[in-house]
Image 1 (tube, helix red, strand yellow):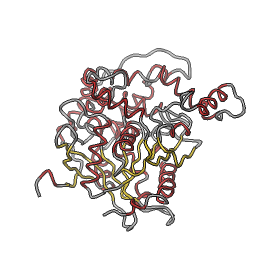
Image 2: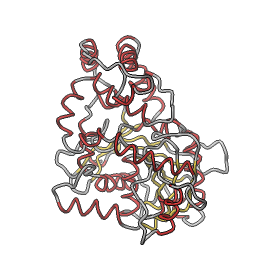
Image 3: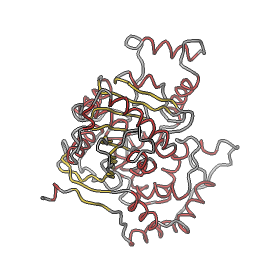
Image 4: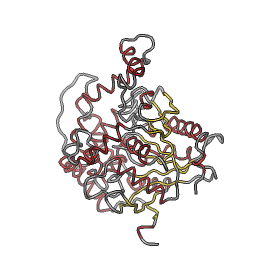
Amino acid sequence: MAPYDEVKPFSISVPDDQLNQLHAKLELTRLPDELDLPAGQEWEWGIPLAVLKPVIDYWQTKYDWRAVEERINETLPQFTAYVESERHGQQEVHFVHKRSESPNAVPLLFVHGWPGNFLEVSKMIEELVHPKDPKHPSFHVIAPSLPGYVFSQRANTSGMNVIATAYLFDQLMRKLGYQHYVAQGGDWGAFVVRALAVHHQDTCLATHLNMNTGSTPELLKNPIMTIKTALGFVGLPGGYPKDEMDGIANVKEFMVTGTGYSRIQGTRPQTLAVGLTDSPAGLLAWIGEKLHVWTDGYPWTPEEIITWTMLYWINGPAGGLRYYKENSITGPPKDPKLRAELDHLRSSWSPTPLGFSWFPKEIFAAPPEWAGIRQRLVYSKKHNKGGHFAAWEVPELLANDIQSFVTVVLEEEPRLLNVT
């Protein structure tokens, strides 16, 4: 077998020298001062020092990366493979791959976002592979790291956007022998999965999202949804319920007060990368604030926050930051072809069956019905708890939704059972 044809087992092994350098940098941490703020306003200015300092101290004195590293390696079967990309040649992709023993298991591609990582699948992978309820479908779970994230190769030229990522991951699934599969995603993963639904309908036969990818109703095209939105705003019968209207209001508030990170990452990611690559405390603050603000009161432990930060620290956060500019989150790319690709992705219709899970503290918690504006919505489920990182916060809820959605899909799509 040629090297590019191989799928190789992978274990995380950070060099001692890198860990020693990390601890030296932590010892030299210099933190800013902060304002004396009224109770309840501390997070409005960024992560409070009262939260940050104890986590940095834990990182210096108690956090055991070697124990975490060993646990990840033991519980998640990881691999790397060179995969042919659409415009960047062979790219090395890191991924988790756990197969079910069931002869009717369905291949499931799980795609994370920022500042998430492949670990997000870890809390529900056992239930997906070996469901407690024998009536639920079983899955072969494949959870790759996005290009430039964690242990996946960074492209050395621009153009690795969500459409190119979808192509890469579709090729990965083919390489693993899966000619048909289901895909699930949130955050950037939702956009990659959307691209699979639009551009790879012959292989990706169904998709499930836990974040709306930006579809909003238009009066002439979606008059009923538009009217329900208007009625909901004034609290009249026939409008969307209060929790969904609260979700719309939260989205509007987020777009005003919560998108500063995406504007810098989407315009000058390389400048930001200098600081976050050099300062572990800075990277911890940048990621840790999102983990707190984007979740539904999830009780993050210092070890969890540090581990998520470590996965960006090991090979540097630059690739994840650049992904925002690649996808023109704050404006069109200069390449008109790339702009046209992204416009087509946003506006085109896909008949691929879609499932949607709604969580109240998702940063884009638009009404579930909106998910069906540009794709055939066949399943949706609302929950009364959960936020942006549903796979980590409420894994049992998301896993059950995936199982229920695929049960519906299998009634019309038996090709998902014909796998290797």
